[in-house]
Length: 230
Image 1 (spheres, rainbow, N blue to C red):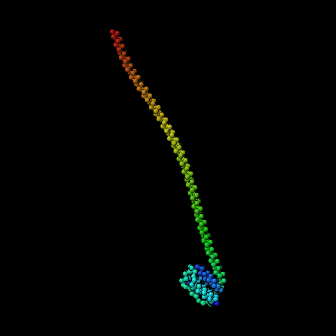
Image 2: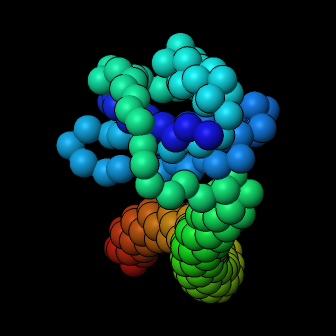
């Protein structure tokens, strides 16, 4: 059995399922020992260990140098060297990897739940705001209804005042008609009196003329009496 340590360096080799990509090939080759870990630093590094039959290990090393995940950016190249240390079994890696992925999934799920809770809280705040806006609109509608009621009352009062004014106008017109009737009656009375006075004047003139005639007759009678006496 031989052991190899492989370093894969690049701008993007973490969080793109690179280790599972390598594990899948190691499992296909039936390597008994396999391990892979992400090494954090200025440059992203995947540190890989493979142990088993020399031919299979060499085939695996060749695979790592010529095959990459679609999202990987292996700008630093792939290097390999002999390794003398212990390498855990591929089954142990699988168990640990699955636990790690489950932990990540749980953390991601908690993050999603927190995000959902935050969104629910935001929605609740928006609903509360909408309720407040609806309450404000209802208050405004009630105020408008109250104003409409007041306006209707004012309109009814104005109509009552208008009716009273119409009644007063009608009464004033009646008084004016009565005044016109009185004026006509007074005018007719005045014309009648004027005619009567005119008649009295004519009678007075006739009486004066009769008096003159009587006086003339008296003078004539007096002259006749004097002649008769003489």
